[in-house]
Image 1 (spheres, helix red, strand yellow):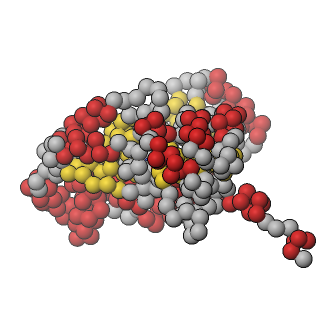
Image 2 (spheres, rainbow, N blue to C red):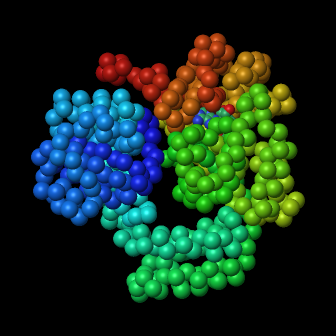
Length: 464
Ligand code: SAH
């Protein structure tokens, strides 16, 4: 984001504009919506500008801009549509410390004016940093249709009611009340006439005050492997409604973006072997926030039930009689196997697949290794980078074939996904060479489909 959107206070501030033609008119139509003091410099103003001056909407100076006009101004628009003149005026303004916009010249402007959807006091500003004005216009048209014109008056009436609504407990209850007002009770009352809105608001408040306070709740949500499009609709909705989101390190920023703006975001990221937030502390956070009535989303990567220490957290909330539910997600193994075009199970190859963690393989019994070392076994190894050499050693010791395919998929489903196709024999060396820093899933017994085909395809001439 190169241009940062802000809403500027313009009341009683001076805004200057040089120009009297089409570009000036377009900008003035917008600027006249503000309560700024508008000064227009135009030796030959369009008739509209003269009329606006007569109506007291702006001050017209029938001459060129001079340096003496600038001190104390907030903004300056160079709208003469004449490159040399605009540049000259812009440099006068810049010298006086006034922010400059040159119409249709993004490069030399210090700020740009967005496309605006006006439901005063609700204002939507749309900008594309000059990249796609067509897109900005399309979005504007879409919003103009979607936002009822009554939104402005509703917001103004609502504003005067905020103190009263503070009688509702902060957070969920208050939010539910306002949502009801803007999207149900408010528009309904407005249809009967503006005077019905305040009484309707009062009724609505009574109804909401009478409602029993909603109890806190935890949703254990699987955030998937990283691609936000692999979130379930339920996960999206939970994020959209959460008061508090407690998330792990592997949750991608694009997914965090989907949480409600007002939600409290708590990072309890656990580095594989590095600094971590103690599980105890996470449990405490879950309990404390739900006890104060919050809707908490405990966002875990992949599927929350796979190597996620979910049970400890469930036990902690259960101990306090807090309600919870699980929203399943796409686990890394599913994303990774999709990334190499394979199936997790296949008739005639493997009827079962194991999910292992490289983290505590040391506790793996001999018979487990022996079973895994048999031909055609498939295992998805989570957190397996550091333990690659150990796994290799154990499997070879129990008779596994050195040529067994092993595939490591880093950042599965993400834009920076990488696939390392190797064998049990070469795994530790190839993995070290690949210098993977992202989360990686290791498939023992699976090769990427393309490689499988290349190895087994019979050349045409041999068929003949
Ligand atoms: N609950 C998660 C797993 C948590 S353990 C799930 O169901 O996926 C963390 C391990 O998951 C990582 O060390 C890595 O092995 C794997 N992992 C998570 N996201 C991944 C991704 N996008 N690509 C590859 N592996 C991933």
